[in-house]
Image (tube, rainbow, N blue to C red; front, top):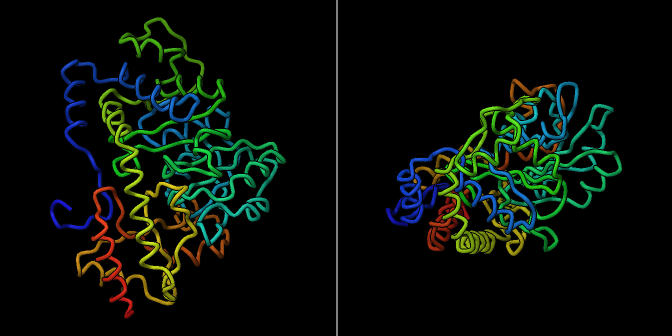
Length: 372
């Protein structure tokens, strides 16, 4: 660490990103243009299918759902233990997020529980790749196919992760990624929708530019539409050249970031294995690129431990409070596994500038606090 301060997470940028931003500023075309096009082309090559960039991961989810025609009266199945962005993206369309329980081993969607919650109004299932773990995607897609549902993967935390040796986003229905400041790569803020569905892609392209039809091509060439039509609700969700410039440089560094994150995960797993008061998530460090590192505490007060760790300079987080416990989404549903796990989870520091020696120190302090 450069300043001897352990951070829970952090943006990792260098001179390359700064220079790229200055180049955009010098060109004085800050909005959506050729840099966004180039970033999308790089992503399309990476995923081997088209990607459309927007200004946040939440916008990606929102526009993907809207492009599928999801709206008032519809329902979307989604695990409750996720960031509120997943739920907000659903309710932004006018649809109702239906909170589902989780698999406690991976904190991903419990398919059997989701099956119990399907109704005639269910249109989409949204699996969330929690802590970069994918969960039983084959089962989810089989469930979706059997019930004529679309699948929108909330892959905000899973850029670079593999499932059955296939890159998340390179297969399946629709995958949505986030490039916010602390994700596996960042564009400052940003997100992307990745799919083979050409109709969905076009709707997302138009909707991100206030619904102005076919305006994307104009923007890429430094122009804009003056005589146009709008036939759908749109939003100001497009990515800017400034954001894309950062993303392009980050993408170049991603192989280094990915290996470092995997190395840190393996060290955590090695240091914290076989401790009775700690349960690790089932994660394959060779398949995932971890965005966060989460443990489950067993028979120990989490608030007490957080305070003890804070006192020795180690920050922690809680990812997340279940959405069915938030006032806006509280329908009185009972999700026993979610409610139990939500009280146990604790996030420890992880980001590419963290050192192996930092992980060793964190684990040693954690053990001391637990009396081990």
